[in-house]
Amino acid sequence: MRSVMWVLLAVVALGVGVASAFQIRGALEREREYRGAPACATVPVEASGCVWQQEFTVRRAAMNRGERSESPEAELVLPSGKPWEVTFLRTEPVMSGMQKDDRVVGVIWHGRVVEVRDAEGRRQQTSDGPVGWPEDRLGGALACTSFGLAALVGGLWPLFARGERRHATAAKTVRWHGVALGGTAVLTLWAQAANDWPLWSLPAIWGPLALLILMSMTAFALGALRGELDDDASAPQEPRPQPS
Image 1: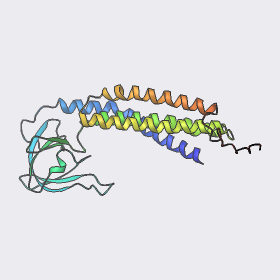
Image 2: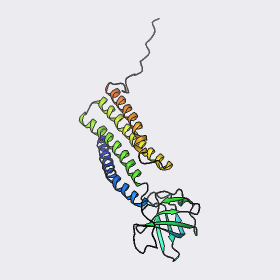
Image 3: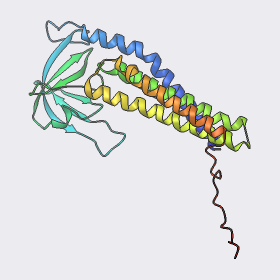
Image 4: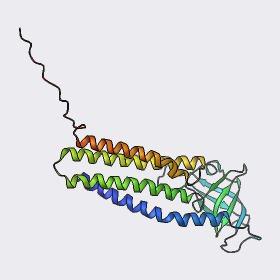
C-alpha cells in the first residue's frame, strides 16, 4: 500500500511538472510583451496592450495570513470612485505596508492592474502580473519532475521485488532522495526570487546540487543492496560466562 501511494504521488507530481514545463515558453513571451509594451498616450477606455499608470486610493487591504486558501488582497479606488479588486501572491514588499487612504500607483495592462507602486517607489506584481512567471514555472517543473521520477522508481521497485528486504530499503533511499531533489529546487526558486536573479540561475544553481544528491542516492541504494543498511547487521552479542 505504501508503494502504491508513492506511485500515485509520483504520477501527480509528474503531471504538474510536465504542465509547468509546457507553460514556460508562454510565460516568457508574455513577460517580454509586457516589458516591451509602450506607454498609453491617453487613458485606455478598453483593454489595451499599452501600459498606463493610474493613481489609486487604498480603501481596504487584507493580508489573509491566517487563511491558507485566501491570497492577500486589496481594494483600490479610482478618483471617480470606481473600485478595483487586486490580489497578490505574497505580502512583500508593498502589500504589507498598505493602509487605508494610502495613495498608490497601479500599472494597468490589458485591462488589469499588474503592478502596484507605493510612495517610497517600491513595486510589487499582482497576481495578474507577468513578471516572474517564467521562473516560477521553471522552478515548479524542476521540483515536481525530479521528485516525481525518483518517487516513481522508488514506488515501483518494491512492487517488482516483493519479499526482497534489501531492494525495499534501496527503494526507500531513492524515494527520500527524490524529496531532497524537489525540496532543493523549491529552495533554489525562493533564493532566486528573493535576490531577483535571472532565469538561467535556477538550473545553474540547482543542477550541481541535484548531481550531488543523485550521487548520494546511488551510493545509498548500492549500499542497501549490499546489505550495509540492514538493521540487524550488528546485533548485540550475549556476554559469555568467564571460566573460573
